[in-house]
Amino acid sequence: MKSVKAQKTTLFVLFAVSILVAEPALANRLQEAAQTGSSTVMNIARALSVIGLAIGGGMMSVGWGQMGKQVLGGAVIGIFATFGGPAFIDMIKSIFGG
Figure 1 (cartoon, helix red, strand yellow):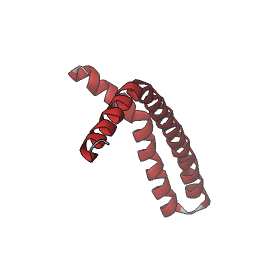
Figure 2 (figure 1 turned 30 degrees about the vertical axis):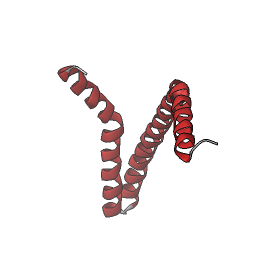
Figure 3 (figure 1 turned 45 degrees about the vertical axis):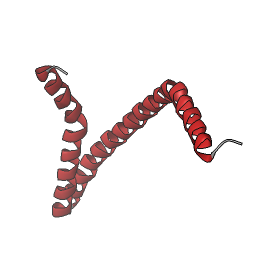
Figure 4 (figure 1 turned 30 degrees about the horizontal axis):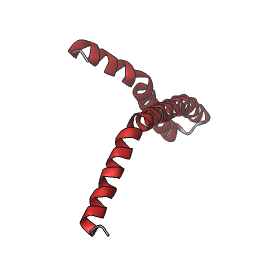
């Protein structure tokens, strides 16, 4: 019989080897999932920003001025963040070399 310490060491070594062998495949799948999730969130944010812009304008034309201004302001901020954010980050990367 092996000692408990030898068993734990063997299990640790087997676990470490299996992690090192499987790491590239897992990393590739995780990267693809992250890119898909990120693009999905950006598409939803862009759609909601444009919808918010239309709803805010509609509320102001109906007579709900104060709430329409708030919705319109939030939509404008969302539009700047979703459409302008990636372009701003690319510009900073090109300036500082990224």
